[in-house]
Image (cartoon, rainbow, N blue to C red; front, top):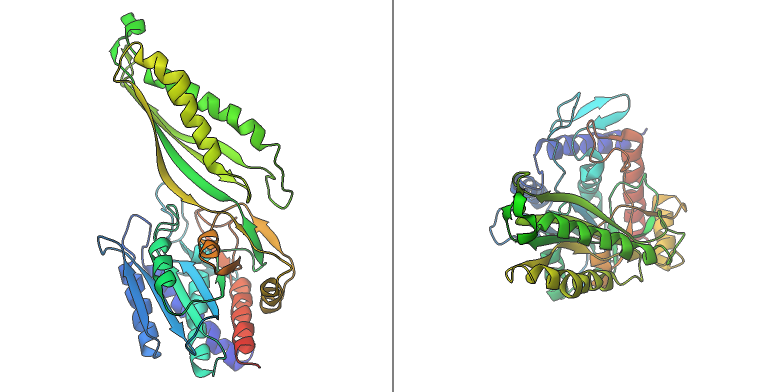
Length: 390
Protein backbone atom coordinates (compact mmCIF):
# COMPACT_ATOMS: atom_id res chain seq x y z
CA UNK A 1 0.00 0.00 0.00
CA UNK A 2 1.41 3.39 -1.02
CA UNK A 3 1.77 6.31 1.37
CA UNK A 4 -1.17 8.05 -0.32
CA UNK A 5 -3.33 4.95 0.07
CA UNK A 6 -2.33 4.62 3.72
CA UNK A 7 -3.29 8.24 4.36
CA UNK A 8 -6.60 7.79 2.56
CA UNK A 9 -7.42 4.61 4.45
CA UNK A 10 -6.62 6.29 7.77
CA UNK A 11 -9.14 8.97 6.80
CA UNK A 12 -11.79 6.33 6.02
CA UNK A 13 -11.16 4.63 9.36
CA UNK A 14 -11.39 7.89 11.28
CA UNK A 15 -14.62 8.90 9.54
CA UNK A 16 -16.16 5.46 10.06
CA UNK A 17 -15.26 5.58 13.75
CA UNK A 18 -17.06 8.90 14.07
CA UNK A 19 -20.11 7.81 12.05
CA UNK A 20 -20.49 4.62 14.12
CA UNK A 21 -20.41 6.65 17.34
CA UNK A 22 -23.74 8.29 16.48
CA UNK A 23 -26.73 6.17 17.49
CA UNK A 24 -28.88 6.72 14.41
CA UNK A 25 -31.31 3.89 15.06
CA UNK A 26 -34.41 4.84 13.06
CA UNK A 27 -36.37 5.72 16.21
CA UNK A 28 -33.68 8.28 17.11
CA UNK A 29 -32.69 11.57 15.51
CA UNK A 30 -29.92 11.56 12.91
CA UNK A 31 -29.21 15.29 13.21
CA UNK A 32 -25.88 15.01 15.07
CA UNK A 33 -24.50 12.75 12.35
CA UNK A 34 -25.91 14.94 9.56
CA UNK A 35 -24.53 18.09 11.18
CA UNK A 36 -21.12 16.42 11.47
CA UNK A 37 -21.20 15.59 7.75
CA UNK A 38 -22.36 19.09 6.83
CA UNK A 39 -19.55 20.62 8.89
CA UNK A 40 -17.02 18.23 7.31
CA UNK A 41 -18.16 19.21 3.82
CA UNK A 42 -18.24 22.89 4.70
CA UNK A 43 -14.57 22.75 5.69
CA UNK A 44 -13.83 21.34 2.24
CA UNK A 45 -15.75 24.17 0.61
CA UNK A 46 -18.71 21.98 -0.37
CA UNK A 47 -22.10 23.53 0.25
CA UNK A 48 -24.95 21.24 1.28
CA UNK A 49 -28.68 21.49 1.85
CA UNK A 50 -30.57 19.88 4.73
CA UNK A 51 -34.12 18.69 4.08
CA UNK A 52 -35.88 18.22 7.42
CA UNK A 53 -38.85 16.12 8.43
CA UNK A 54 -41.94 17.95 9.67
CA UNK A 55 -40.77 17.76 13.29
CA UNK A 56 -37.24 18.91 12.36
CA UNK A 57 -35.82 15.97 14.30
CA UNK A 58 -34.26 14.32 11.24
CA UNK A 59 -32.82 15.49 7.96
CA UNK A 60 -31.60 14.40 4.56
CA UNK A 61 -28.43 15.96 3.17
CA UNK A 62 -28.05 16.92 -0.49
CA UNK A 63 -24.89 18.41 -1.97
CA UNK A 64 -23.22 19.04 -5.32
CA UNK A 65 -19.62 19.63 -6.28
CA UNK A 66 -18.20 20.19 -9.72
CA UNK A 67 -19.67 22.11 -12.65
CA UNK A 68 -23.26 23.25 -12.82
CA UNK A 69 -25.75 21.66 -15.21
CA UNK A 70 -27.71 18.46 -15.64
CA UNK A 71 -26.05 15.07 -15.62
CA UNK A 72 -23.38 13.65 -13.38
CA UNK A 73 -23.31 10.93 -10.74
CA UNK A 74 -25.07 10.84 -7.39
CA UNK A 75 -23.58 8.87 -4.49
CA UNK A 76 -26.42 7.90 -2.20
CA UNK A 77 -26.89 6.17 1.13
CA UNK A 78 -29.02 6.12 4.25
CA UNK A 79 -27.84 7.28 7.66
CA UNK A 80 -30.18 5.26 9.90
CA UNK A 81 -29.47 1.81 11.32
CA UNK A 82 -31.58 -0.99 12.79
CA UNK A 83 -31.87 -1.50 16.57
CA UNK A 84 -29.47 -3.57 18.66
CA UNK A 85 -32.16 -4.38 21.26
CA UNK A 86 -32.12 -8.02 22.34
CA UNK A 87 -28.97 -8.83 20.38
CA UNK A 88 -25.90 -10.31 22.04
CA UNK A 89 -22.93 -8.21 20.99
CA UNK A 90 -19.39 -9.08 22.05
CA UNK A 91 -18.22 -5.55 21.22
CA UNK A 92 -19.74 -2.11 21.70
CA UNK A 93 -22.23 -1.56 18.85
CA UNK A 94 -21.74 2.21 18.65
CA UNK A 95 -17.95 2.15 18.67
CA UNK A 96 -15.51 1.04 16.01
CA UNK A 97 -13.75 -2.20 16.94
CA UNK A 98 -10.98 -3.42 14.63
CA UNK A 99 -10.14 -7.11 14.77
CA UNK A 100 -8.91 -9.74 12.30
CA UNK A 101 -9.12 -7.43 9.30
CA UNK A 102 -12.68 -6.32 10.06
CA UNK A 103 -14.38 -3.18 11.34
CA UNK A 104 -17.19 -3.99 13.78
CA UNK A 105 -20.10 -1.77 14.77
CA UNK A 106 -23.78 -1.20 14.09
CA UNK A 107 -24.03 0.12 10.57
CA UNK A 108 -20.47 -0.78 9.57
CA UNK A 109 -21.85 -2.82 6.66
CA UNK A 110 -25.33 -1.28 6.37
CA UNK A 111 -24.18 1.30 5.42
CA UNK A 112 -21.83 3.69 7.20
CA UNK A 113 -18.78 1.96 5.71
CA UNK A 114 -19.85 3.27 2.30
CA UNK A 115 -20.61 6.73 3.68
CA UNK A 116 -17.13 6.89 5.22
CA UNK A 117 -15.55 5.92 1.88
CA UNK A 118 -17.55 8.59 0.03
CA UNK A 119 -16.68 11.31 2.53
CA UNK A 120 -12.99 10.36 2.54
CA UNK A 121 -12.96 10.71 -1.27
CA UNK A 122 -14.43 14.22 -1.21
CA UNK A 123 -11.04 16.00 -1.01
CA UNK A 124 -10.00 14.16 -4.19
CA UNK A 125 -13.20 15.10 -6.01
CA UNK A 126 -12.90 18.67 -4.77
CA UNK A 127 -9.29 19.01 -5.95
CA UNK A 128 -10.08 17.90 -9.50
CA UNK A 129 -11.57 19.75 -12.45
CA UNK A 130 -14.62 17.56 -12.95
CA UNK A 131 -16.29 17.41 -16.37
CA UNK A 132 -19.67 16.74 -14.77
CA UNK A 133 -21.03 17.13 -11.23
CA UNK A 134 -20.94 14.72 -8.31
CA UNK A 135 -23.91 14.75 -5.94
CA UNK A 136 -24.29 13.42 -2.41
CA UNK A 137 -27.70 12.24 -1.23
CA UNK A 138 -27.83 10.95 2.35
CA UNK A 139 -31.25 10.06 3.72
CA UNK A 140 -33.00 9.13 6.97
CA UNK A 141 -35.51 6.38 7.83
CA UNK A 142 -34.62 3.99 5.01
CA UNK A 143 -34.82 1.06 7.41
CA UNK A 144 -38.49 1.74 8.20
CA UNK A 145 -39.80 1.97 4.67
CA UNK A 146 -37.63 4.39 2.64
CA UNK A 147 -39.48 7.29 4.26
CA UNK A 148 -36.98 10.14 4.39
CA UNK A 149 -35.69 9.90 0.84
CA UNK A 150 -39.07 10.93 -0.59
CA UNK A 151 -38.67 14.56 0.45
CA UNK A 152 -35.10 14.46 -0.88
CA UNK A 153 -36.45 13.28 -4.24
CA UNK A 154 -39.07 16.04 -4.16
CA UNK A 155 -36.20 18.49 -3.70
CA UNK A 156 -34.27 16.87 -6.53
CA UNK A 157 -37.30 17.05 -8.85
CA UNK A 158 -37.70 20.78 -8.26
CA UNK A 159 -34.00 21.55 -8.70
CA UNK A 160 -32.71 23.18 -11.87
CA UNK A 161 -29.97 20.53 -12.05
CA UNK A 162 -30.49 16.80 -11.86
CA UNK A 163 -28.05 13.88 -11.79
CA UNK A 164 -28.26 11.30 -14.54
CA UNK A 165 -26.85 8.35 -12.61
CA UNK A 166 -26.96 7.10 -9.02
CA UNK A 167 -24.83 4.62 -7.08
CA UNK A 168 -26.40 3.43 -3.83
CA UNK A 169 -23.78 1.91 -1.53
CA UNK A 170 -25.83 -0.80 0.18
CA UNK A 171 -23.67 -3.84 1.03
CA UNK A 172 -23.30 -6.02 -2.09
CA UNK A 173 -19.77 -7.35 -1.53
CA UNK A 174 -18.74 -4.75 -4.12
CA UNK A 175 -20.63 -6.54 -6.90
CA UNK A 176 -22.78 -4.31 -9.13
CA UNK A 177 -26.48 -4.89 -8.50
CA UNK A 178 -28.99 -3.96 -11.19
CA UNK A 179 -32.25 -5.09 -9.61
CA UNK A 180 -34.34 -5.90 -6.56
CA UNK A 181 -38.00 -6.49 -5.76
CA UNK A 182 -40.46 -3.87 -4.62
CA UNK A 183 -42.26 -4.01 -1.30
CA UNK A 184 -45.69 -3.10 0.08
CA UNK A 185 -46.40 -3.36 3.82
CA UNK A 186 -50.03 -3.28 4.97
CA UNK A 187 -51.86 -3.48 8.30
CA UNK A 188 -55.24 -5.17 8.55
CA UNK A 189 -57.51 -4.11 11.42
CA UNK A 190 -60.54 -6.27 12.23
CA UNK A 191 -63.20 -4.72 14.46
CA UNK A 192 -65.67 -7.24 15.84
CA UNK A 193 -68.02 -7.43 18.82
CA UNK A 194 -67.01 -8.64 22.26
CA UNK A 195 -69.12 -10.86 24.48
CA UNK A 196 -68.73 -13.64 27.06
CA UNK A 197 -67.30 -16.74 25.44
CA UNK A 198 -70.23 -18.76 26.79
CA UNK A 199 -72.38 -16.85 24.28
CA UNK A 200 -69.82 -16.82 21.47
CA UNK A 201 -72.39 -16.82 18.61
CA UNK A 202 -73.66 -13.43 19.84
CA UNK A 203 -70.24 -11.87 19.28
CA UNK A 204 -68.06 -11.23 16.23
CA UNK A 205 -64.70 -12.93 16.81
CA UNK A 206 -62.12 -10.55 15.38
CA UNK A 207 -59.32 -13.11 15.59
CA UNK A 208 -61.26 -15.70 13.64
CA UNK A 209 -62.09 -13.23 10.87
CA UNK A 210 -58.47 -12.08 10.82
CA UNK A 211 -57.50 -15.74 10.40
CA UNK A 212 -59.77 -15.96 7.36
CA UNK A 213 -58.08 -12.90 5.90
CA UNK A 214 -54.67 -14.49 6.45
CA UNK A 215 -55.91 -17.69 4.83
CA UNK A 216 -57.05 -15.64 1.84
CA UNK A 217 -53.54 -14.22 1.55
CA UNK A 218 -52.25 -17.77 1.11
CA UNK A 219 -54.77 -18.21 -1.70
CA UNK A 220 -53.70 -14.96 -3.35
CA UNK A 221 -50.05 -16.00 -3.09
CA UNK A 222 -50.52 -19.05 -5.32
CA UNK A 223 -50.99 -17.29 -8.69
CA UNK A 224 -48.00 -15.06 -7.89
CA UNK A 225 -45.81 -18.16 -8.06
CA UNK A 226 -46.74 -18.60 -11.72
CA UNK A 227 -45.04 -15.35 -12.77
CA UNK A 228 -41.38 -16.32 -12.59
CA UNK A 229 -38.22 -14.30 -13.15
CA UNK A 230 -35.11 -16.40 -12.59
CA UNK A 231 -32.97 -13.30 -12.12
CA UNK A 232 -34.41 -13.04 -8.61
CA UNK A 233 -34.34 -15.31 -5.55
CA UNK A 234 -36.98 -16.47 -4.87
CA UNK A 235 -37.99 -16.08 -8.53
CA UNK A 236 -41.57 -14.98 -7.83
CA UNK A 237 -43.46 -12.44 -5.72
CA UNK A 238 -44.21 -13.40 -2.11
CA UNK A 239 -46.77 -12.59 0.58
CA UNK A 240 -46.19 -13.17 4.28
CA UNK A 241 -47.82 -12.23 7.59
CA UNK A 242 -45.26 -11.10 10.13
CA UNK A 243 -47.11 -9.75 13.18
CA UNK A 244 -50.52 -10.47 14.69
CA UNK A 245 -52.15 -9.03 17.83
CA UNK A 246 -55.57 -9.58 19.35
CA UNK A 247 -57.63 -10.78 22.26
CA UNK A 248 -57.77 -10.01 25.97
CA UNK A 249 -58.74 -13.24 27.71
CA UNK A 250 -59.79 -16.74 26.71
CA UNK A 251 -63.31 -16.27 28.05
CA UNK A 252 -63.94 -13.09 26.05
CA UNK A 253 -64.79 -13.15 22.36
CA UNK A 254 -62.14 -10.77 20.98
CA UNK A 255 -63.39 -7.43 19.75
CA UNK A 256 -60.24 -6.45 17.90
CA UNK A 257 -57.38 -8.09 16.00
CA UNK A 258 -54.74 -6.71 13.69
CA UNK A 259 -51.96 -8.20 11.62
CA UNK A 260 -49.21 -6.87 9.39
CA UNK A 261 -48.49 -8.34 5.98
CA UNK A 262 -45.85 -7.59 3.37
CA UNK A 263 -45.59 -8.29 -0.32
CA UNK A 264 -42.22 -8.42 -2.05
CA UNK A 265 -42.94 -8.26 -5.74
CA UNK A 266 -41.11 -8.62 -9.02
CA UNK A 267 -40.67 -5.78 -11.48
CA UNK A 268 -43.70 -5.88 -13.76
CA UNK A 269 -46.07 -7.25 -11.10
CA UNK A 270 -48.99 -5.04 -10.03
CA UNK A 271 -48.95 -5.30 -6.24
CA UNK A 272 -52.07 -3.15 -5.91
CA UNK A 273 -54.14 -5.79 -7.69
CA UNK A 274 -53.35 -8.30 -4.95
CA UNK A 275 -54.38 -5.96 -2.15
CA UNK A 276 -57.48 -4.86 -4.08
CA UNK A 277 -58.46 -8.54 -4.24
CA UNK A 278 -57.90 -8.85 -0.49
CA UNK A 279 -60.04 -5.77 0.15
CA UNK A 280 -62.80 -7.14 -2.08
CA UNK A 281 -62.76 -10.42 -0.13
CA UNK A 282 -63.14 -8.46 3.12
CA UNK A 283 -66.00 -6.27 1.85
CA UNK A 284 -67.93 -8.82 -0.16
CA UNK A 285 -67.43 -12.08 1.74
CA UNK A 286 -66.52 -11.41 5.37
CA UNK A 287 -68.08 -8.08 6.34
CA UNK A 288 -71.66 -9.12 5.41
CA UNK A 289 -71.38 -12.06 7.85
CA UNK A 290 -69.93 -9.79 10.54
CA UNK A 291 -72.51 -7.05 10.08
CA UNK A 292 -75.34 -9.57 10.28
CA UNK A 293 -74.43 -9.82 13.97
CA UNK A 294 -73.08 -6.30 14.62
CA UNK A 295 -73.44 -3.43 12.16
CA UNK A 296 -70.34 -1.75 13.64
CA UNK A 297 -68.06 -4.59 12.57
CA UNK A 298 -65.51 -3.64 9.91
CA UNK A 299 -62.24 -4.70 8.29
CA UNK A 300 -59.73 -1.97 7.42
CA UNK A 301 -56.57 -2.15 5.34
CA UNK A 302 -53.97 0.51 6.10
CA UNK A 303 -50.79 1.13 4.11
CA UNK A 304 -47.63 1.16 6.25
CA UNK A 305 -44.87 1.62 3.70
CA UNK A 306 -43.94 0.87 0.12
CA UNK A 307 -41.13 1.22 -2.34
CA UNK A 308 -40.94 0.20 -6.01
CA UNK A 309 -38.69 -2.46 -7.52
CA UNK A 310 -35.47 -1.65 -9.35
CA UNK A 311 -34.46 -3.10 -12.70
CA UNK A 312 -31.67 -1.37 -14.62
CA UNK A 313 -30.56 -2.69 -18.00
CA UNK A 314 -27.25 -4.41 -17.38
CA UNK A 315 -26.40 -3.91 -21.05
CA UNK A 316 -26.69 -0.13 -20.68
CA UNK A 317 -23.72 2.24 -20.86
CA UNK A 318 -24.21 2.99 -17.18
CA UNK A 319 -23.93 -0.68 -16.24
CA UNK A 320 -20.76 -1.03 -18.28
CA UNK A 321 -19.28 2.05 -16.62
CA UNK A 322 -20.31 0.65 -13.24
CA UNK A 323 -18.44 -2.57 -14.05
CA UNK A 324 -15.33 -0.53 -14.87
CA UNK A 325 -15.52 1.55 -11.69
CA UNK A 326 -16.18 -1.48 -9.45
CA UNK A 327 -13.76 -3.65 -11.45
CA UNK A 328 -16.39 -6.37 -11.51
CA UNK A 329 -18.79 -7.70 -14.13
CA UNK A 330 -20.51 -10.00 -11.60
CA UNK A 331 -23.89 -8.35 -12.12
CA UNK A 332 -26.57 -9.62 -9.78
CA UNK A 333 -29.88 -8.90 -8.10
CA UNK A 334 -30.47 -8.84 -4.34
CA UNK A 335 -33.34 -9.98 -2.14
CA UNK A 336 -33.43 -6.86 0.04
CA UNK A 337 -34.84 -3.52 -1.06
CA UNK A 338 -33.23 -0.12 -1.44
CA UNK A 339 -34.14 3.45 -2.29
CA UNK A 340 -33.05 2.70 -5.85
CA UNK A 341 -36.51 2.16 -7.28
CA UNK A 342 -37.58 5.60 -6.05
CA UNK A 343 -34.59 7.30 -7.69
CA UNK A 344 -35.22 5.32 -10.86
CA UNK A 345 -38.86 6.46 -10.89
CA UNK A 346 -37.57 10.03 -10.59
CA UNK A 347 -35.60 9.57 -13.80
CA UNK A 348 -32.16 8.86 -12.30
CA UNK A 349 -30.71 5.57 -13.57
CA UNK A 350 -29.62 3.63 -10.49
CA UNK A 351 -27.40 0.73 -9.54
CA UNK A 352 -26.37 -0.60 -6.13
CA UNK A 353 -22.79 -1.38 -5.13
CA UNK A 354 -21.15 -1.11 -1.75
CA UNK A 355 -18.79 -2.72 0.76
CA UNK A 356 -19.82 -5.52 3.09
CA UNK A 357 -22.55 -8.12 2.92
CA UNK A 358 -26.13 -8.18 4.13
CA UNK A 359 -25.19 -11.53 5.68
CA UNK A 360 -23.72 -9.35 8.44
CA UNK A 361 -26.22 -6.48 8.25
CA UNK A 362 -28.87 -6.24 11.00
CA UNK A 363 -27.07 -8.89 13.08
CA UNK A 364 -25.06 -8.72 16.32
CA UNK A 365 -21.36 -8.04 15.82
CA UNK A 366 -22.07 -6.52 12.40
CA UNK A 367 -18.85 -5.93 10.47
CA UNK A 368 -17.34 -4.88 7.18
CA UNK A 369 -13.98 -6.23 6.08
CA UNK A 370 -11.13 -3.79 5.58
CA UNK A 371 -10.55 -5.42 2.17
CA UNK A 372 -14.10 -4.46 1.12
CA UNK A 373 -13.57 -0.91 2.33
CA UNK A 374 -10.41 -0.70 0.24
CA UNK A 375 -12.27 -2.03 -2.80
CA UNK A 376 -14.96 0.61 -2.32
CA UNK A 377 -12.32 3.34 -2.13
CA UNK A 378 -10.82 2.00 -5.36
CA UNK A 379 -14.24 2.14 -7.04
CA UNK A 380 -14.68 5.76 -6.01
CA UNK A 381 -11.15 6.62 -7.17
CA UNK A 382 -11.92 5.02 -10.53
CA UNK A 383 -15.08 7.11 -10.73
CA UNK A 384 -13.09 10.23 -9.87
CA UNK A 385 -10.57 9.43 -12.63
CA UNK A 386 -13.43 8.84 -15.11
CA UNK A 387 -15.00 12.18 -14.23
CA UNK A 388 -11.74 14.03 -14.84
CA UNK A 389 -10.68 12.28 -18.07
CA UNK A 390 -11.97 13.47 -21.44
